[in-house]
Length: 89
Image (cartoon, rainbow, N blue to C red):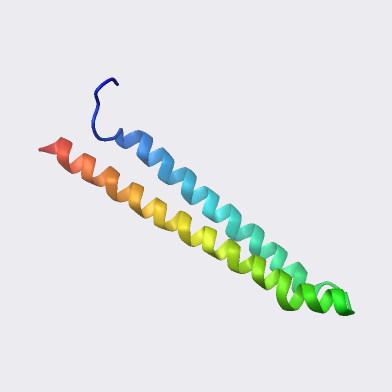
């Protein structure tokens, strides 16, 4: 819509849904990999480095992505609700 100010609440709801789905997918993948990384039969300095620092660092990054996506999802939800409230008046 030309000149529209605000948002389409249905589009925003779809975005919130897609963000929630992405968060779930990342969380599930990280959990699956974490379980395998902790149970894999692997010994030696490469295993120690992977299990002691490389994988934990990757998990931290993935947790930051999940947190950032949750923040975005919250913001979009808030903006959507504000649009609904404004449109109702």
